[in-house]
Amino acid sequence: MRDIKFTNVASSTPFDNSTNGFNGDNVQDALEEAREGQPFQFVTFQFLGQMSFSQYLYAGVHSDSGMNRRSGDTSNGYRFSNSAPLVVNKTGVVDAAAVAITGIAQSTATPAANMELKFELWKVGFANEGTLLGDIIFNVVSANYTIGNFQNSSILTGFGENQPQNINVEAGDLIGVKFIRVLGNNRVSTITNVTLNLEIRETL
Picture 1 (spheres, rainbow, N blue to C red):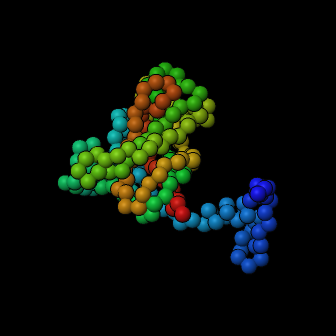
Picture 2: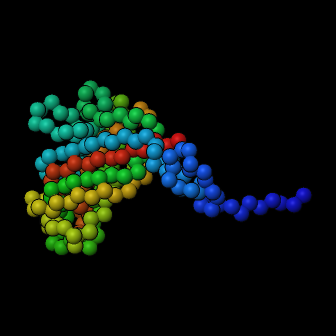
């Protein structure tokens, strides 16, 4: 019996878009459009003030009420009201992150051309810190921004960008975000006023 070889690929296979509202006229385009229509969830984390060591951001808006809890906790997690994480609605992937930061600094005299800004996404535990789900990394091109030296993030950097990510999450996960302080001229060590928004897209 001869092997049957299929040479058609999705991008060259016609697709009838006359009755379904799709724009593409091939299978590949239809698949891409279907993916764009998947449900998604936005979650926001914030810290107003200077962060000069590794610590959790607040979930939602950081207010001065005195009742706020960080989005995660290194000791007891969600237990004893030590933290106030957010919950994931549907199993999916964090496929993008947007961040706005007033001031960014590194720990030496001169910043490198490219600097890594690092956060961690945690599945917050019910009685402990939980499980690290992955790193949320931004590349900061120092030529495009004013970067503080010797951890001076009181300067005006005005960093605001959206960059792709790829971290899997599951429905029901309690999630928190931690800023990670790293020393060196190619790492961000201190930030002032940060708002971070994650896009979680449901996986089919």
